[in-house]
Length: 210
Length: 173
Image 1 (tube, rainbow over the protein chains, first blue to last red):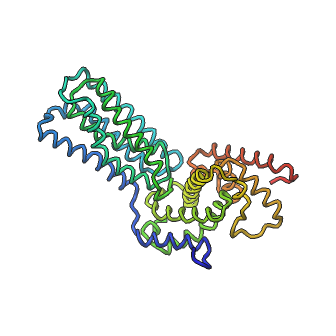
Image 2 (tube, rainbow over the protein chains, first blue to last red):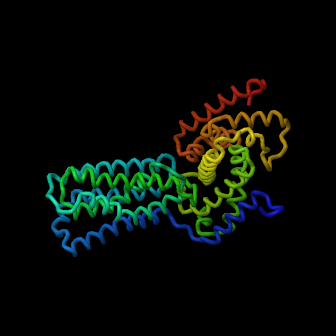
C-alpha cells in the first residue's frame, strides 16, 4: 500500500495502468470467432491428414454430412455460449441452446453409425485421440472463460464445443458401430466437457464480467 | 463507454469518478472488512478495463459495473470462507467500514450493518443495491443475472428478514 493514497485512488491507478497496457478492447464476438476457428480449423487439418494418409476416403465426407452439420453447429454455439456476455437471460439462452444442440448432435452421431465395421486397433484409441485433439481447443476455451465470472453452464458449453474437434475427426476416421461410439466417443467428449468445467472453476479469473 | 472501449483515459476517469464511490460503498457493505472490500474494488475496476469488449449497450453501465462487483465480491467471500472455515466470523463482522462518514446514530447503524451481514448473500446484494444505491429492479436483475421478478422477491425477502432482525430495536428501516 502507498502511504497517503485512498483505496479509491489506489484502485484507479491500478485500472489506469491496465488501460495503458491494453488500449484496444477485443470484442467477445471476435474472441468467439477465434475459438470457432481453432475448433473447426484443427478438425479440418486433422481431416486433411486423414485423407492424405489414406485413413479415410473423400466420399465418406458426404456420407457423414448428416452428423458433421450438427457438430459444426455445436462448435459455433459452444463458442458463443462460452464467451457471450450475460445480459438479462440472453446468456443463459445461448447456454441452453448449446447444451441442447450438443445433446441432439450426440444422438445423431450415435444413431447414424449403425452396426459399423470391425477394426484392428483397440477401442480406447478413439477415446485417447478424441481427448488428444481436444486439448488445443480446450486451452483456447479455458483462456476465453478466464475473461468472465465463473459459470458451470458456460464452462460446460465451452467444453462441449471444444469436444467437437475430436467428434468431427472420429466421424471420418472411425468406422465402428453405435455401441463403440456411445462409450468411447461420447464418453471422451463428456469427459472433456466436465474437465473444462472443473478446470475453469479453479482458474484465476482475469475478469469477473457477466 | 464507446470512448473508453477505444482506450480513452479521460473517458475512463469520468466513468470511475461516477461509479467507483458507489461500488466501493456496495462492497464495504457486502464485506464488512475494509481490506477485502478494497481488494475487490481493485479487482472490479481491473475487470471493467479488461472486459470492456464484453459490454453490451442493452444494459446500463452502472448495472454492468455492479454485476462485476457482485461477481468479484461473491468470489472473494467464497475464497475467504474457504480460508477461514474454522475462524470466528464475529472478528470480521466487527471491523469498522472505512471511508464512511460517521452516522448520526452509530449504535443503530451498527445494528443495521450487523443485521445486513446476517442476510444470505443474494438477499443482501439485492437490498444493498436497491435501498442504499438506488438501483432499479431492472438494473438489479441485470447485475445479478436474474429476472426482474426474482430481483423483487430477493429484495422483499431481505427486507422482511431485516425487519425481523431489527424488531428488538423498535425501529423500522
